[in-house]
Image 1 (cartoon, rainbow, N blue to C red):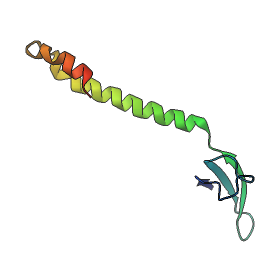
Image 2 (image 1 turned 45 degrees about the horizontal axis):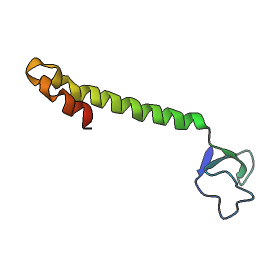
Image 3 (image 1 turned 90 degrees about the vertical axis):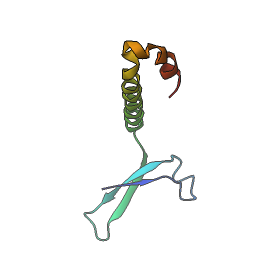
Image 4 (image 1 turned 120 degrees about the vertical axis):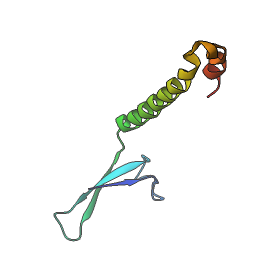
Length: 82
């Protein structure tokens, strides 16, 4: 089980990387929290890709009505305005 912290708990020497995660050791009683390690950047990249892809799909769907010949004059406005 992982524990993600978004602060350094007021101890920047022990937790220099923010945000960071800890793994819990459930083989002992009470469970112990393991050492801190950085959050992988590939998760951040995936999030950016999903948001960017969703925005491109939104813009494409919004542009569909402008492709009809009577509405061609709306293409510049739809291309500029979000």
